[in-house]
Image (tube, rainbow, N blue to C red; front, side):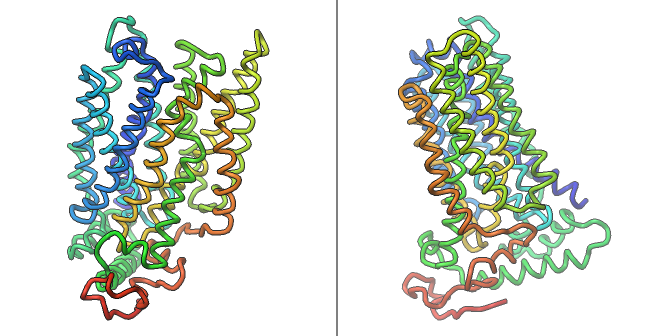
Length: 493
């Protein structure tokens, strides 16, 4: 089966990422529905709308942490299934909502599920991917997120063409979430568990069979055996030194370094402003003078831009150019685009006629540019880098922390604050992201980020200092370690 099966697995697991994109994007159109706004007695710029979006992100924070437990106890595949079931319940509740409380609870559940899926799907893909194609395989996560945004926008755009007295304009887009949930629930059991998790749970024979299904091309038995031996040796060494609990991630220097890299990778992604644009672009277009169905149409076109550029990048470039160079390029280019967007936004209020129309077009162009640049840098690389640098001993817990805190907690703050900021300080809001990119992201990536392209997950262990394959420093406070490893010395495989 080889690469074709590996890609099929990544795309199917990416249905969880599709839910991430769809659930994140669907409210962009829902909050433009006159019936929705009247039904819940609100408007797009109020704190209520911010609360609807922030409860989704807030739920994702806790979902990410739950995923850290279920990945270690149930495995990668079952964690994806749990996320899909929770999302199905949340989607049904939102679609049938009779009051604001039902919407909020439904959004919390959907966020909870997306938190589980957003941290488990990239890990599942990464552990199943061949090192030479890991950028492509895990990059499918961002591709499916983008496709989810596309589908949410066009479902919302089509649903908007009903009488303003019809609730179909918002109930159908929210209910549409059930379809990918059911696809995941029905299909996930037809795909294998991660070979690394199988070895970790003493199912080595099954793991070898899965590796062959994922990577065999007819003549690479030796390569597969070498991969299997490397995985098995590393995990056996890891088992001998693994410490329980979550605090251990912060006490081992090399684990702490990798955890902070993964967490800040997600923070840097949020600080590009991409999710603020994704959630509130209709408000941004309104500030540029674009209203009505034209507003929703531009939103639909915007959501197509990212996946097109992302697909081109992950197929042809990501596994060749690596991780650092695109991140450096993306930081600088997004910053320039946001400065230009702010400059245009400052001129729109006093403009009229043809000049206002030209400024609106330019404003849309630079928002589209942010999406295109993001999709060739932070979009796919944030998931690839964060998933591949996490050591197996803390992979579930570490990914949960990085995604929950770095991605969803930061997203929760911006979801609540952004509609108020866009209504009150408009274009000046962009300078927050500009300052962060120049003062924090750019120097951090340039001086601290490591290149990981085409290295196995076990080889990446060696990039982060003293810790070799399956080792634990013996200077760690022994009181914090499990009894069976209290006298364990540093080992090298």
